[in-house]
Structure formats: structure tokens, C-alpha cells
Image (cartoon, rainbow, N blue to C red; front, side, top):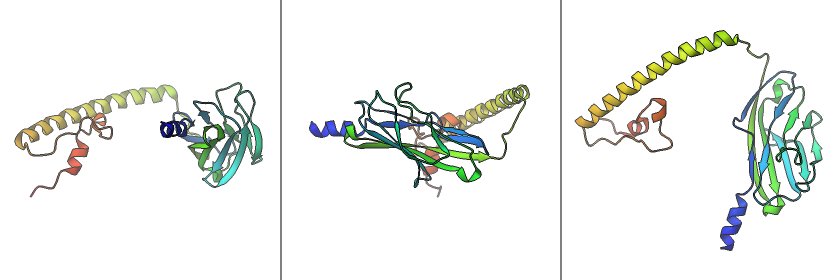
Length: 206
């Protein structure tokens, strides 16, 4: 039982950068790099760090407890801390000012919590810096997307029906072939590629 307790604590700390881990920024603009952490049992003297391309430390802070705001330990002059632990939910986001093309790369938000037996966790954001953002007419775009989306949908439906029919015919002709993978989390059935995993594994015909 004590072993199980320690195991549970080790995985209580979580770090997240949101639904997507990619950010695109315009050259010479300021970009927000979001990060929040959660912990089941609270935190004490928690240390968080931001790294560029895994090795370069660009910001490091410490949070005494839930009732206090983070204090800065060290930082890059172009990095601004915009998070909060008293106003927002354990937000340790930063803003990178005046981004340059050389700033493109991997940014890692790392958290270490002494209260959880020094449990550590991190999350990663990939930053792309562009010369200019692509502008489009929303109305025209929506019409094009609507029409093209409808055509693609019909095409995928047709291909899926055709593939399923061919698959059924194939299965009736040869009962010894490997069955269709339908319950695996890694299959491509929902993308119209029914049975792709099974077909890749099937041995070549003699």
C-alpha cells in the first residue's frame, strides 16, 4: 500500500500548453507561450522553468504556495512573465517580445514540485516565425471550404462504401485472411481507410 501511494503521487503533477502545441508568430511581434499546471495535493516552493530547444534556460520562477504570486529567479531580458497563481488557475505563461526568425523552435515548460516528492513534468510548444501572415476574404473562403468540403465528403463516402464492398467480397472469397481491425485506437477506419492496419500486415500472395 505505501508503494501504491508513492506511485499515485508521482503522477499527480500535470503540465499543459492547451489544445494545440504549435504557435505561429509574425516576425518582430510579441507572442504568448501558454502553460498551466495542475496538482492534486497542492504545492510548496514549486519551481518552474522555460527552456528553448531543451537546453537554453530563458525563464525560471518559484512559487511559495497557492496564496502567493511567483517570484523570478532568472530570465532572458526579452521574456516577460504574464501568468498568475492567485488570479488564474496556476498559469505560468510567458510572452516572448520582438520575435526573430532565430527564435523559431521548441519551447519547454517544466515544473518541479517538492511537495510531491520532487515530482517533475513538462509540456512543449513549437514556435514558427513567419515573414507575414496570409490574409484571406472570409466570405469567399467559407464558400470555397463549403463546396470543396462537400465534394471531398462525398468522395470519401464513395471510397469508403466501395472499399467496404470490396472488403466484404474479398472476405467471402477467402476466409483465411486477417480480419478487419475495428476496435483498435490506432486504426484509420474513421478516415475512410478501413482495414489499413490489417492490410499492411497481410502476407503477399504466393
